[in-house]
Image 1 (cartoon, one colour):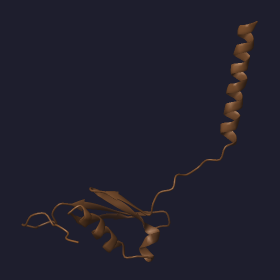
Image 2: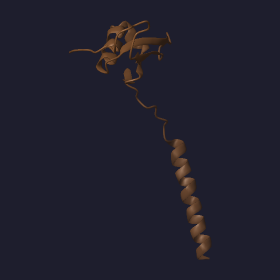
Image 3: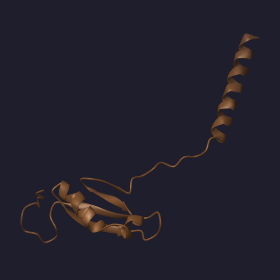
Image 4: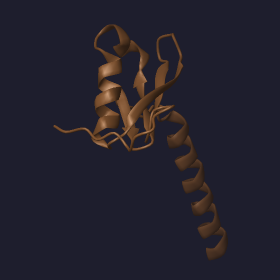
Amino acid sequence: MRKFGAASLVAMCGIAMCGMLACAPAQAQWVPPIKGNDTGGIIAYSLASQMDIRARAIDHCAFYGKVVKFLAVQPYEGGYISFACRWLPYGAAGGPVRANY
């Protein structure tokens, strides 16, 4: 009898947990408008009308001693502008670009 009671208690707790999860609202994670690392990054398309995104991307890559190469644009609300940080611009014969602040 005790095993049956324990099993039914576990079953009721499982149903209650599923019900709580089903009633909880879904949450979207917040993403910063500018995100990246030493290999590149993304900028929210909504910032294109508010700031100079080329200068922001150049500053981001210059922090790592690299130059920027824009890759793609998703021109709608919620889209992103992606860019890569490269060691040398195409056709450059010199060494890596260094940013002196």
